Each structure stands twice: as structure tokens, then as C-alpha cells.
Length: 400
Ligand SMILES: Cc1ncc(COP(=O)(O)O)c(C=O)c1O
Image (tube, rainbow, N blue to C red; front, side, top):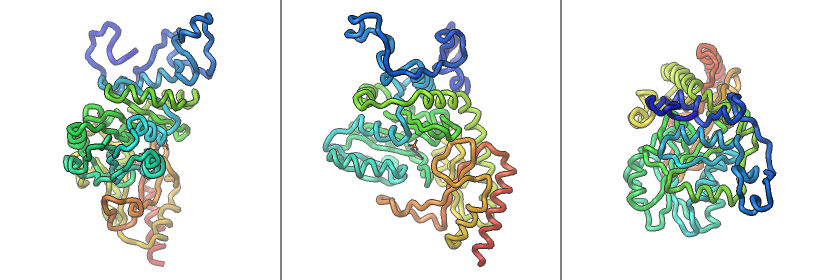
């Protein structure tokens, strides 16, 4: 099964169909809908000669099995024709570090958005510095102005759009054009939108990263990272993954594949519920403003509307100034919103955050305490009732 019909005469299929059909080959598995979960290390060869010549469809568990291949091919089809291959790694952070390592050389310069996921910065500061790689952080809203920061040794520009705490929307196409004009590559963390809502390769990205832990898995029960490469980056990505010995356990690959099949329907619900909650929050007296790309009132909305086909369930809220203990009272009162890291599962989450301590290229001055919400698959009415109770607790704590 793939993007087109059996006789190749049907029109190209929509992404919602492709998440269901991509990477499937029931005929290879006795007609069963899904591939088996191959728990595998050794692959036996018919003869010594075949072994020495590596003559086998699969050579060793670490190098790939029908299970890993099914997920890789499915993701590749979803990314579109410019995607040359997808690599699976054990976490989203491993996807970030491996993608960076695959293109970097000693002495290179990197440009990384100031809004990047914190551990991305840590990798640049604590690992890449040991290779003599220097990183400059840039204003996520810089757009074509990135050209002025390019140096002769700038190897790559790294984006995360929107930023997963602060939600700045980046002009990916403009940044990519400026980077390519100077011979640099473009990497992007596309976890928030997934390839369903943001077509990274069509916007000029060379390596697109996802924490599969989030929406692909979708059930908060798996750690997974995916890296999608175009022709320019596929060989070095493949070599880096192979030479580093990276692979993912078969059960986790299977959970990723299983989650992927319902990605479109879950994301649609996350989008609608997230927007409904955000619109309700925007009218609350306790709220200063929303950081939600799909809200018309949001400064990054025009870019979202131009480049994205949907929004996921993750956004942030800036509260009107209250003492920090009132924010804690709000969060602690919530029953349906768990307090915890990560996002993209079926359940709602809420965390306090502050970007100010890590920013170097920009100042984070939101105007009040900030809370990030992940809107899960619960009924919106129940989530609003929960938030209402939280606000009541906030009022009590603020007036104490
Ligand atoms: C935007 C973003 N990228 C990458 C990651 C890392 O993913 P993982 O937790 O699978 O390592 C996270 C985790 O929260 C994230 O929010």
C-alpha cells in the first residue's frame, strides 16, 4: 500500500488517508493488517558466502527489521516526495542531537533559534563545543535578517516553529532561502505541527526532526525520535545513525506505528479543543493574552495561516500579574490537567514556565506569569469546568 492506488490511476491521496495506508504491506504478513513486532538481533544467512557478501534483505537487528521499515516508510510517505529517508532514534532529543551531529564538522558555526527546546541548547553548549563548534542564538522572528548572522563557516540554521514554550512563529521559507544562499543547511524541530500540519521540505527544510514521543506515539507511553532527510542530507544522516549504532526497541517502534494510524483524527480533535479552550481563556479576566498560533489575535497568526494547515493542542497562556503562589494554587487545583513534562498524549497537561533565564538573543518579558497547556482528548466542557475551579483557587490565593 502506498500513496497512490494499485493501478496508479487514482488521484494523489490526502494526508488523512496516507496516515492509514502509508508503509503498509499486508501481503508480506499473510494478510494481517499490521506488521509483526520483530524482536531481533541475529539474522541467519543461507551460506557462508552470503554472510560475507552481506547478501540478505535484512542483515542485523540494529540495521533494521520489517517493523522499523514499516514506520520509516510510513513517515517518509507522509513527508512527501522530497523526503529521501527517515531514521528512527530512541527519543526526540536523540533525533535533535543525531541530526546536528550528522551535518556538523569540527570548527563549524551554527545558528540556533533562541526559542529552541532547552536540551537542544545544552547539546550545543556541552557537546558540540567539544568539537570546536560555536553556536549563535538568533531572534526567532528574524526572518530574512538571518543573512546578516551568517559567517563563512556557518554550516546550518536550526529552527523550531512554533517554539514549544513561547510559540514564536518563524518565517521558515525566508530563513531557509537566506541559509541556502550562503550554502548552509536548514534543520527544524517539527514536533508541534507534525508533517500533517507543516510541510517542512516544501518550506526549504533539509532535515526535519520530530519527537515521536509526542503526537506520533500519542499515548504518553513511548520514547521515540524521527529524523527525515532530503537528498542533500540523507547520506550523512544514514551514516551517522549506522556508525553510532542507534536503533529503537521493536515494541516502541510498533507503538509509534500504531499511534501514527490515528494521528489525523487525534490532531483534528487537539486542534479544535485547543482552540475552543484558548478562545474561552482569552475572555477570562485573569488572562493577559494567549500564545496560540491559530488565534487571530496572536502576533504569529499570519505566518501560521500562510504555512500551516492546522494547530495541535499545545499553547501557552500569559496570566495577569499575580504572586507565584497563586499560579501554583491554580495548577494544583486542576484535576484533569496533569502537571508533567512532555505533551502530545491523549491527556491534558499544564506546567508553569519561564524562558527568561535561558534566553541570550532575545528578552522574554511576557507581562505576567506563564503557563503552558496541552489540551488532550477530554470533553472541552469538562476541561473548562476544571480551569474554572483553578481560577477560583487562584483568586483565593491571590487575595490571601
Ligand atoms: C519541541 C520538542 N522537541 C523535542 C523534545 C524531546 O523529545 P523527547 O522527550 O522524546 O526526547 C521535546 C520534549 O519535550 C520537545 O518539546
